[in-house]
Image (cartoon, rainbow, N blue to C red):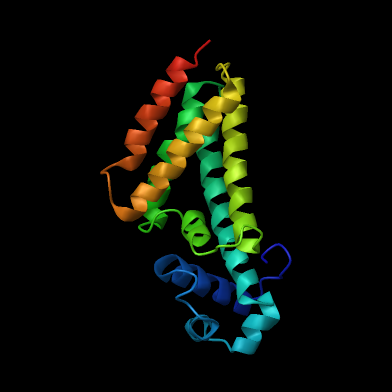
Length: 192
């Protein structure tokens, strides 16, 4: 996993290749032979750096999540005052992210859809990422003085995840804008 593996140049190439392949083709459709060939390394090097395909998948999800969080933090920094705008900035940031990084929806949701076991490390990682978003939204709803911030954060997180899933299948058009409008309505209903 990226927090446990020193990213040597070979490890970086492996992670970059795996990230492209996992996102574009899916976890089960991509084998370690394909990743190693794409990265220009041997399978032994891949296993030496990451230990297993499972650990490489978790590293891919964590690296993508870290990049997303950095982007979201920059968007939040542009709205320093607590309020509804800081709750809704999530939708603006993710729309730009998906334009740049997406095309197939949410990497975490896609990965979780391929895993049946809720205790699998990939499922645990996805749950951790989704819990982080809900907690961020709870904090922003509280700071904005919105009523029932836990309930509101859960509803906004569901709109966010729904828009992410919809963006991967291409329907409806402009899912992030539609979700943002619905989230704004919810925020207005929870204004104190």
